[in-house]
Length: 424
Image (cartoon, rainbow, N blue to C red; front, side, top):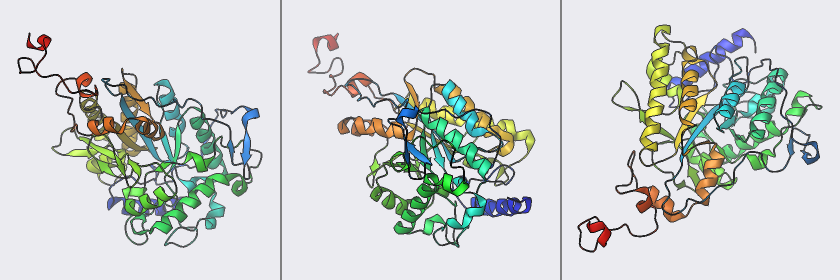
């Protein structure tokens, strides 16, 4: 993308971001996420004997995903694990190498994550007219497209991420927010078309780039794709209808309190959450973009003297939310991010410090949305119903053993009907 085109694209995106709730997939310099950048690491390889190519060989079937644990049912009387989900909107590898960096951070801290891939990051600029966005002219995208080098580097990261047990979701394609054809105005059928195109670009990147000898992605995307986050958290109502009909299992496009999730329209509602915002009386959404907007507005590079403070606010807000759940109701903590260097990269530093601070604690599982959905599906519905009765930060009044024992709690000491032991 030429420099003038990058600047123009950045201006358009900044305008729509200002009117929206959640982050937009733009680079710190106004460029697109997933732009080209060198990457020296060789891609992890699936065993050749297990590979069965799909379509043009852009994707493949390689068997069960490695490092994906089988979900366990919570035993009666046991305290639930503390789940934390770190997820990334518009995942792609560019010159900042943030995708590859956070893969390594996750691996070093016993964590897996969800990467929401933007389909247009698998489509080269010269083939942009292949994208037919709903309510827009062919070849239109508010986050641009990619080139062969950028696609090759992104494919390497996607391949290694999946083989390490991470999930590859979707952030759709053109990232249209606001009025005038934004995703909030799309019909159910238009959402289905957008999803079909996002899948197609992933399943045909070899044909569209000409890199037919490159290694395939090691998964069948039709089976891998089970959830998403909509651009700017808009259009959720019709998206969820389309997603349910297409067999998706979860959505994370909403805003929620820190309570145990439930199903909505047949999908697990794994929305991002509100956590304390240090220095303020109100709570903040668990996303880097929203912290930025409430600190420097839509300027992605605000006052450098405040960068450290702003990152600390995000880190401490997320940690406060974590401990509120960890010491309270144990509700999963859902966090959303972008591979960006907004305000000097302070939010990337904050996220990394949170990963290092929480993922190695006892009973903590830093997982992908797929793993969380698998665990929720494996539970006794009565157990989940009971967990949902706990409010934000509320631990059981007696003990977890009594709360989830499956038996009536013993009468308090000294109360008629209490056992002899309890009357002591």
